[in-house]
Length: 440
Image 1 (cartoon, helix red, strand yellow):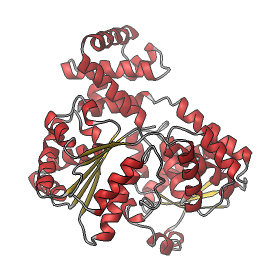
Image 2 (image 1 turned 90 degrees about the vertical axis):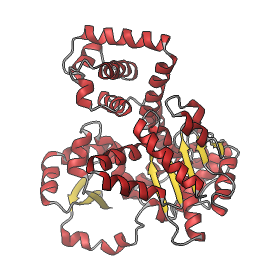
Image 3 (image 1 turned 90 degrees about the horizontal axis):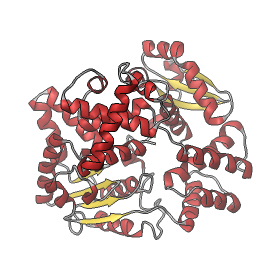
Image 4 (image 1 turned 180 degrees about the horizontal axis):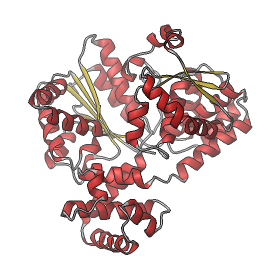
């Protein structure tokens, strides 16, 4: 188990509750977790300035998060360049990306009644790209194995055809990449188009995020046509079928439905049990049947939660000497259930997602602009903050530049009216809500 990478990722996720996305990207973008030794998390950052800032400003917050994760005190230490180089050989063995890692293959995918059609379709695509199902569209809730399957397709095709050109992108990253390319000039835009349109295999994860993004959909429409007409394989994943994406262009919706649509459902008990035992074997450990059954009976939503529960149990064992027994299993399950059932996004997270969805800067959504689109986005954000958090109307007003609570109440009333009167707008609110919850 590559626990140190998983733990550092979790630390950064939890720091989002205390630090803005800009702060995290500014100070932590070059920092990586190297190892955990004697209850000390070892980090490395090549920038002396960033390392010093983290040590002086954020070290206590990192320790607090580690204490929250493991219920035990941890130290955090930055390695010098010389110390870091001692870990260099091990680092060089790590794959450049998950597509290269071999972790997500057909062999490591546990097949059950809930996913066997999606598995069979993915295998057929990998065995004969663009001959049977093009595009292959896999949909289902978060954490059910969609990304595992598209990585498995890529891994198998790469093994069968060395040198094949594979392009992988997430739906929201595609929008960001396009915006950056346009801002950089025509040459960058052309370079981006070539990157995707010259691919032999295009994988787009969470394609639902391009819905409502006019320019992104325009670019993707032409990219899709180029690849399809030249008989190159396209594989897409989404949290919903194309017909439920109300803001998706009709011409894209019909193209997504040209090939094969398959869904993945939450795994049944037998499949969950098999996943637990399979993951334990991959991580080089053995899990007792009683503990495996206990986890399978209590963690039922998705594969990601199963893995998260096991990660925590194994972390207890590896980091603080807590054996994998019924007590640690009960604690890990309780923590996972609490996280999944009581997930409350922050106001900042909601405002960020609403801004992204409407294509506006956060400063515009929170600011004084009376532009119609800005007002719509601002009122929608206020409505979702009120609905999805425990903040009062005065608290919400403070999140939006110190507005009076009566302004917030007016916004809530306006959105409720629009939802009742406008089915398309009601779907917009539902889609934004799904996007926010999917980040859990």
